[in-house]
Length: 84
Image (cartoon, rainbow, N blue to C red; front, top):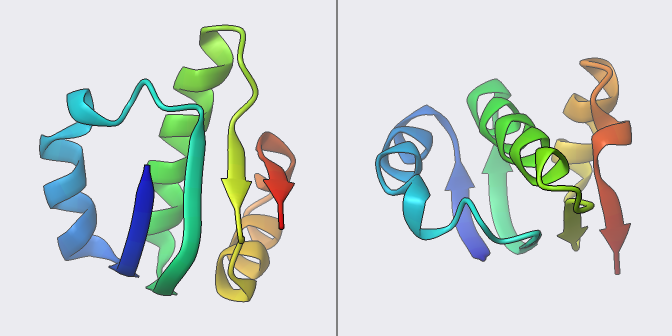
């Protein structure tokens, strides 16, 4: 799935409502993500755990600095593999 714009509380609510459409993806393209907050990190963690439960590795393409900083701060950065 490709995410763009903001991944903050309001957008997370919408994504959560349609998670059946993208929850099975093992790769997230974040190259066009502009802003992320703790709600955005939380939904990505839930997605990553679901991917890992299926025996796959959750991969992020183009991890934004904000996401990397928050994920590191919360101790969850190790859940994701990253691609340029």
